[in-house]
Amino acid sequence: MSDSTHPEDPQHQEGDQLEEMTEEGAPAPESESSTDAIDRELEIFQDLQRLQADFVNYKNRVERDRGAERQFATAETVRAFLPALDDIARAEAHGDIADGSPMAAVAQKLKTAAEKLGVVAFGEKGEKFDPEHHDALVQTPNAEVTEATVADVVEKGYRIGERMLRPAKVAVFVPSE
Image: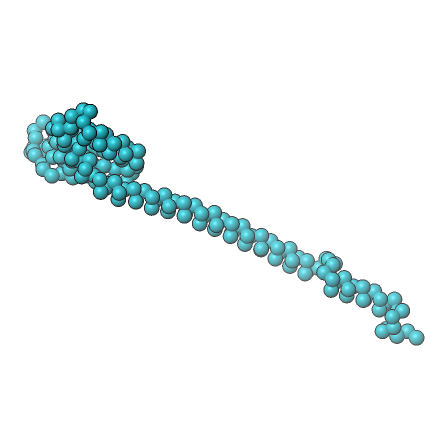
């Protein structure tokens, strides 16, 4: 009696073991399915690498944006105080702020705070006129100059880093024809 469904049939038992190994997740013999699995794992790994790179780029972009927003907020705040800095500079130029006076102390605190925030004043008499950094209020012909030159500074210009808060307001000597 050689029935193929009989439990004692050796061929029947081998088939059952192969089916059990495949069903239980045991590694199948080398075939196209193992190559497909390796390809799938490689694809998942590459997706993970792309996802990680996207996250790093996102994190860097957020940090950069935070820095830009912080610099913008600082610039807008300092811009509101520029008229006070101008008044202090005019008062000092006219000798209205005596050394050791309470006003001198306040003026020094404002200047120190501006320096701490990275505020830099620019615009000096005798500089070459640069329309990107200077706002010409008056132009006067002068035979002694060969290029536009700052004749006088009405109000200093200010910047924080590369960000201009306000151009310097100046009078300009231009070459006479």
